[in-house]
Figure (cartoon, rainbow, N blue to C red):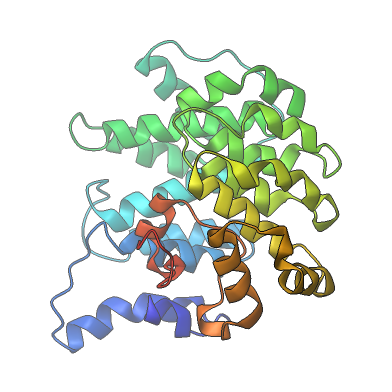
Length: 301
């Protein structure tokens, strides 16, 4: 995490020196699934041009002597990022959902070919070996189908919300943050209590919400799920003018719950290093990226 944070943002390739660094220092770190995806994702984010980013990720995949293999975390991470990148560029494309795995694979190869990504299509065809890359390629096909069908129309997305969530969990929520107009807060009512998605819907909503609509967070301060309540409250504080927040602190006669007092106290007076984040991140996000860790959070992630 420290390496990712200190590398110059103007030199994405510097990130990739991590493996040389640990090898030269004889540090026993493997290219495992724990940190490789984050390193590759940050490398990808630092390259702003889409086509250049795709080319660099492909170059990274074939920089070694090994054949492309989705059991290799570097290869797997690169391919998923390339497919997501391509999916975000797909023009509006309405097509029925494939009913079989064979249909999903055919859709993936045909779509990549039509878009001019024959090299990626060939990689996918060679990688979908049962018990190896089969599931990963199937997941890529579903990702491409979802984004090509629902990334342009909010109405179509809402009408097919359950289908999209069943195929690509959490992606309907990611699409909503891009498609819902900033003035249409009420549209989020249908997903904020979405089953089996934990804190993710509230986090997405808080990141999307304009400060001028912060009052819409009030109803969630008393939510039965403490994590949703604290996420809503921390987001509210970060979207509220400082003078109003000071008023809340000085006029604590309203007797807000103790957990709100603690968050408000930290928000106003904590040093920058331990100031609470704008939202309470979902537990899976924190476990995946320890840069989101809050050492004073009562959940002790």
